[in-house]
Amino acid sequence: MKLDIKDICVVSDSTLRDALLQIDRCGTGFLVVVSTGGHLEGVITDGDIRRAVLRGIGLDTPIPEVMNERCFSLPVTATDVEISQAMNDRIAFIPLVDAGRRVVDYAALSRHRKFPVAEPVFHGNELNYVEECIRTGWISSQGRFVTLFERLFADFHGIDHALAVSNCTVALHLALISLGIGEGDEVIVPDFTFGASANAVVHANATPVLVDVDPVTWTMDLEEVKRAISPRTKAIMPVHIYGHACDMGPLMEIAERNGLYIIEDCAESVGGRYRGALLGTFGHAACFSFFGNKTITTGEGGMILFRDSAVMERARMLRDHGMPPNRRYWHAEPGYNYRLTNLQAAVGVAQMERIDQILGQKMAVFDAYQKALAGVSGVTLPSVGEWAEPVCWLYTVLIEPGHLSRDELSQRLLAKGVDSRPVFLPMHEMPAFKNARTVGDYPVTTHLAAHGLSLPSYVHLTTRDIHAITSSISDIISVRTMLMGATD
Image (cartoon, rainbow, N blue to C red; front, side, top):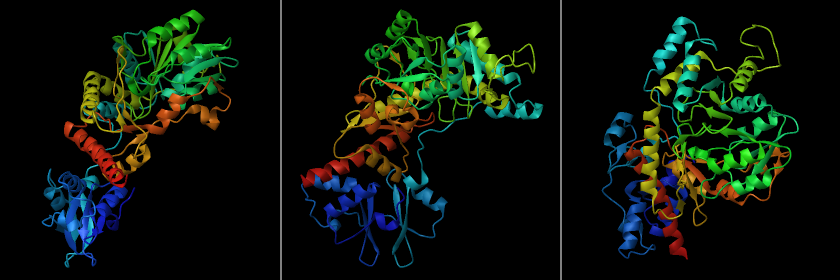
C-alpha cells in the first residue's frame, strides 16, 4: 500500500473519530494535522487517541484538544542524513514542510527501515570460497566444494549418503524416480504445502493423493493418511511445514505396516528435530532446499539424503544425464541435468560452517515473537508438538476472524515498513492438481490458508526489531478494535 502525503494528513476541524478512521485506513499509526490551507498545526497518533479515550475523552472531541502542537518538523530540503539523525525512539515520523510551513511530504521509520520477510546472511567464508572458485576456474558442477558440501551435510545428519542437486523440487522428483515410483503409483501429500511437493509427484508420472493437516501442528493428519491408503499407494511424503516436524513415529509405523516408502520434504526444516533426532533421518529419502529465503542458502540448490547406497547411486546417475560415473558420455538411462554448481556449493559450505549458530539465532527469533505476541487479541501463535524441536524457517501466526482480516493487517504492516506473506493455498483447489485424488474435506487447510500470515524471520533480526514489528501489529489491531467498539 503506497501512501501519498494526503493519506496521512487530517484537517484540524476534524474529530478524534475522523482521525481514528483515517489511521485505520492508512495503517501508519500517525497523522499530520493541518489547517484548511495545508499548514502544519500538529501531529496525532493512535496512542494519543487511546490515552485520551482511557481518560474519558469521547471520540467526537475535536482533534486540537488531543494533538501534539509542539511537534518536530524539518524543511522538505532536509537531507537523508539530517532526517536519520533526527529520528530516535521518541520521534518515529517527521512532517516535511516548505518555506510557508505547508506540509508537502513526511519522513518515517517505515520509509527508512524495512523489514523483509526473509534475508540471507553471509557473515562467514562465502565470499572467500566463491572467489576461490572464480580464481581456479571451477565454477560449474565439478570442483571440491560440491563433494565437500555433500559430506558436511551428510555428517551433520549422521547419514552416509548425500547428493547435491540444483533445487529441492528436482530433489523430490529424483528421490521419487530413484525409488521406482512412477506411472500408476500414488503418493500421499499434505494439502497444506508449497506446490513443489505435489508437482514432483506429477512429474514422476504418479498421482498425488491430498490429505488434510492437523490443526495444531499443521502437518499431515495421520488419520487422514490412513484413510488415503489404497492398493496403488507407493509412498508418503510428509512435509515438515514451516520448520515443525510431522509426528514421524506413528507415521513410520503406518508406512512399515503397509510397505510404503517415506520421502521427507524437509525444504523448510533443516535443523528441526523429532524426539531429538534431526529431520531427514527417518525416511528412505529426504529432500532439502537452499533457496535464498531458507535457513541456510546457496541462492538456489537442494540436497537429498538416502539410506540405501544402491538408490543413491541410481540417483547420482540420473542427476548427470543418466551417465554412470565410470563411463563418460555413455547414457544408461534418459537422465537429467540436476547438478549443483561449485559456486553454489561454495556458499553452502560456508553456511554449513556456521549452521549451529544460524539455528540458534533462528530459534531466538521464534522465542522473541512468542513472548512479544502472547496475549495480543486476534493473533493465534504457532503451537509446538511435545515431540518437536522446530526450526523457525518463517514465524507464522493466524489472524483469527474478527474486526481485522489477515489481508488488511498485511497491508497496514506494509505501510509501517513491515513485509509479510500469506501462507500456502489449498492444493485441492488448484487447476494444476485437478487429477490428484482427494480424500474427504479440507477444513483445516482451508482455515489456515485464509488466516495464516508469515512475519519477518531472518537470522539477524534483533530484539528491538521484533519489538517494532510486534508493536505495529498490536497497534493496528488496537486501532481497529477501538474503532469498532466505538461504533457498536
